[in-house]
Length: 401
Figure 1: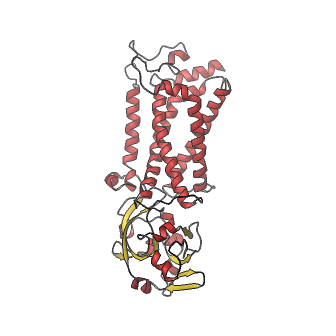
Figure 2: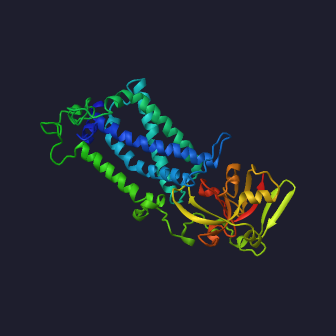
Figure 3: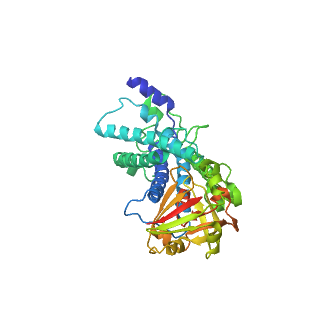
């Protein structure tokens, strides 16, 4: 068995592979996963806030930035992970599979990291297209898998720390196989290594630098052709992302349509009213009555968890003015209900920091026009620094808590 596995490892070996190459790719991949993990924690906390949660509202594009980085870094991680797997998979074929406790921990951390990363990145990419062909809840699974990835990554780094430290920086005189030469073909079999006498790759073979340049270029192209859905300065290069800025009704993309939400008849009803309540006080506003209240304009982005965003001009009534209209204290929080008959975000909670903010509106207009039905007509919430799923459309009631 040992001869067979070593023969397979030798067959797949390449002079391009080395411990140094693996460490360099690991740095890039580790950075992308760290960005994904930290920005993902913020997004999850905004949607399911713990008691200690801090809600940033400035700059107003804070969530537009963090979630754009989250999705962009996740997309960048796909080619980086594939390159990292290419650099190490002959090592995974060695026999025996477990040689010691430390080696067993290393193998377990690698297996857990690879499996969870492949699932996380694949489902995350599919989620940007709002396609859910699996039976499990995406958001909860995505969140807990991120902890599995982070934990297995830290375990793997701890086990491999000596090799990482040794190969962190390039050193003069080190050959393509690195100081240890762990993956050099000549060390696996008696076949001659595909190297020239001076240690460089033979003609027709890639050097390590050329391989890293190809991986970097591929990652850059993938990022540049998709990040335009999140960052306006990259919009002209947005060829492959599922959303594009400036598209949709009133030049703003739409995630959840009125048909998806089944609200067209309710939102268009002539007797629609927005009910605002606080304890025993209850007031109902028609669209015309809301329009007659003092109107304010805010330039705020819609930034969705799938990574796309769009800044627009919104006009309507300040939420803090509606809170005042029912005699509630300014430090109140809200429970907002949509006309949607069902859905995970039909009911939304809004902490007091958003309610008090002068930019938070019950919006009636978008980009100088009455809200389109697809953007939440007759009224919707818009607030700085919140995920798009919490900018509730097709308002029905606002309960001051």
